[in-house]
Length: 241
Image (tube, rainbow, N blue to C red; front, side, top):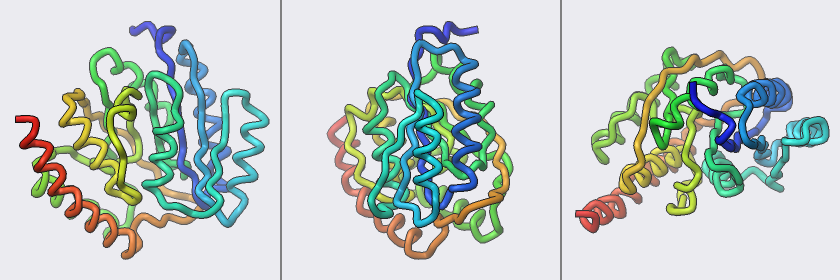
């Protein structure tokens, strides 16, 4: 057993079209994090300009729970920009994020926190993806592309269930505004020598809300970011030798 009383943790959730999900997610997060008996914690909702009532529900949660705060985007900025805001605004020593769509079991956060003494980053991978065949195929192709270009080997690099040592985000600049953000962070962490552990997590079907990750426009922008970063990454590897 680790001494969690010495750990402070930021937990954040990007939320878009999640008016029926975010209450369940945040309420469960408060329950789980309270049970860990941490030194301190905060929960941040990054509300990405949702046209539904996600923002109103988020504000009500901030009024209900003293450790919850909300960052509103006046318009939809996209997934990468939302994650970037979460990492930049985290105040604790460690930062965890998962999506606000209620597709993960937050009880599994306990296993991630237990690995803090042994790893700078704990990366989840979905043991059984609850996606359409199309989403599974695009995810497989994306992970293979990253391995081919960057020689980076993760089971599921864009899985939205990760725990980081927060000082990483004071050392790197995040440029991605789309799905490449996870890979960009992991590649930059690798160059800085951060240690990583992978851990399988359950993936639950999405019951409410709208998923935007598989839109062709998002996929094309993400592929463009992959190739834009390739030159910079090769230069960084050369400089580190």
